[in-house]
Length: 333
Picture 1 (cartoon, rainbow, N blue to C red):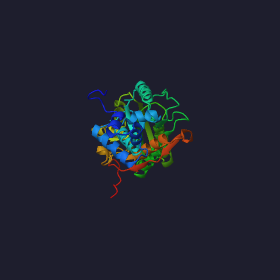
Picture 2 (picture 1 turned 60 degrees about the vertical axis):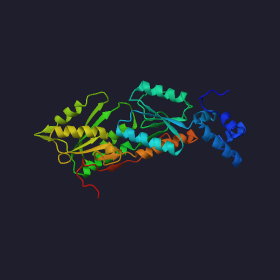
Picture 3 (picture 1 turned 60 degrees about the horizontal axis):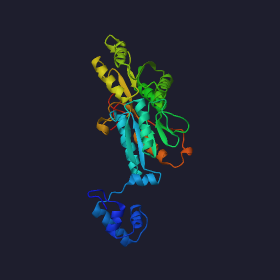
Picture 4 (picture 1 turned 135 degrees about the vertical axis):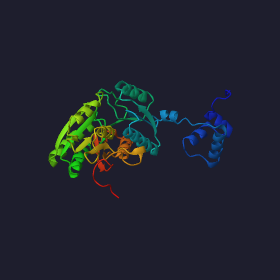
């Protein structure tokens, strides 16, 4: 006997519609049945407010149409935009996203991977910082910005070309002595190539350059001291600065203001990521733009392909430059 207030079952729908249980199952799973039977079943479903358990259906079919996303946080604009576009790409393919915000915690990354695998996700997309992350071979995994082995595809921007483009742009805008500022993970990953690209661009254009690199956890004050130490008679020795993220560029712009340096009059600044005010307005600074929507689309496309063995180990997508008010050229009309 059915318990009072318990959720209706498929048997209840069959009883209400006056049809066999198999007929209800066919309607629920989109299989062909006679129109009159289909109408009766659909009316019974509406009347009883029967909820189809698509997750349970997926388990039976060894496919849950759920993908886990491991992301450091959704606070940083780049990560937030990436999360947004990955979710859109999944929804377009009728997949759901299980969001796992790791806050750069290596142990939490591994816990989330285990949780995702226990929940029988169809795959994982991860922007991770755990060098020892263990992924079961049976779980499809797509990495962002870090190569994790020949069997795990990595999707990234062309970071080398982006660094080179930043140097070339500063040279084109008249800079002669520039600084490279980096604050980030010591882990070997694709964004580290921005440094080599910038050096290559400086050498090709005859730019004099200095570098200040600090790792996560080290104080930002090191950048303040570095810049303050290069002020001679009230003027900064650099006429151009490349920051490896727009977030760092934002902080550097505030420091330059405190040091009495006008941007872009005294010094021009280029960041990296393509961050926009309020997510879709003007760029927060002149920047090397990552193709976030294309990165997201590629991650989801690779993950949902049936044959993982045919997938490339590295997919590198092109970047572009965008004016954002911190360089001296006139904006395009």
